[in-house]
Length: 158
Image 1 (tube, helix red, strand yellow):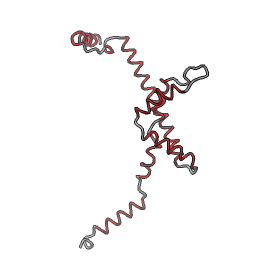
Image 2 (cartoon, helix red, strand yellow):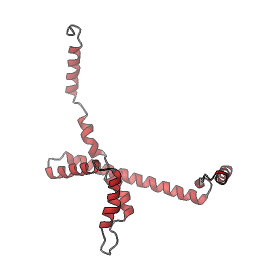
Image 3 (tube, one colour):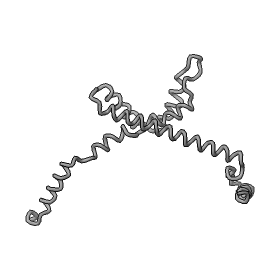
Image 4 (tube, one colour):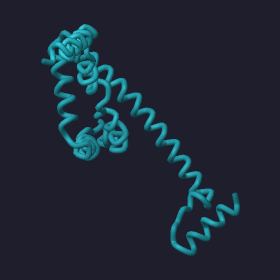
């Protein structure tokens, strides 16, 4: 591996293209640690998104009007605002308003940056209506096929 690392070091010196993660052990270790952290945060966000989505889908099918209405407005609020505005709201707005008893932030801005993508997910609770509504019952499909056979019959085409 040393010849490869030497070539990237030469590339940096000759052209200014600095890919130090390929020739510097310290930068490579920091890059690897950041990559693992990214994978862990992605896994956490995916799990939270699925849990929130399943709970939202379940509540949308509820007989109780109040929880259904809350979930409806939750979906509308997050569906109809741009993701950047949502991140600004969580990161700068809500994070600075929530104070702990000692005067410091109750939830840090970094925590909001990690949690907000999973909370604003458009996962199962959002896709439920389109996915389930798009499935046509078997009786309708067979009725459509019968109607197509009758209308395509040569005697009826006249």
